[in-house]
Image 1: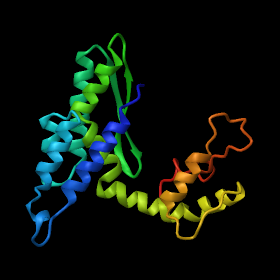
Image 2: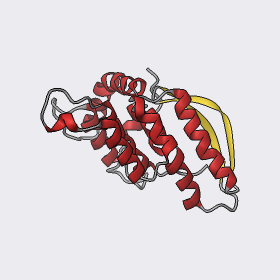
Image 3: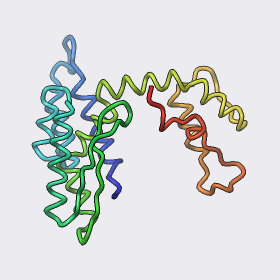
Image 4: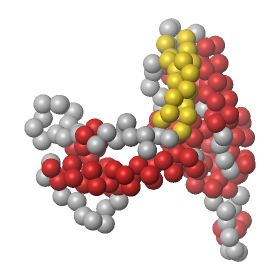
Length: 200
């Protein structure tokens, strides 16, 4: 399986999510902003094709739209000679996602990544991180795991304050993950509290 250009996709999705969900109220400069046009511009600049941009025109992303976008990326990758096998679906971050493997064969990884960015990156990232279902799941997980994360950080002598959000503390936990597992100062609180496995 290959890695995906998460940084680009996340940036595209964050921009698209913020702009598409934005609904200017009242007068002034903001009232002249067309959120769909702004999101389309942002997505296009990141390399998205029109099929991805069209998904955001109604301000939401459905599972069917996510699946169609991913299948367009898979078709592109197959045309380049890669083997893409869709095993089925699985739950990830509170939403249903495609479970698949990607074997590059002789295809260049940059070209395969471009297929993903062009046809699915923004839609995929929005679906997994910014869709209402994903956001609701993340909120519930943050409430459920806040105290366990605080406790874990305290066990590892990491100072934190009561006003820090779960995301603030998660950032502290990420810093603690040592590249070398034998590092005596390294700790992995996200693993200790089973952050990735929490299903709500």
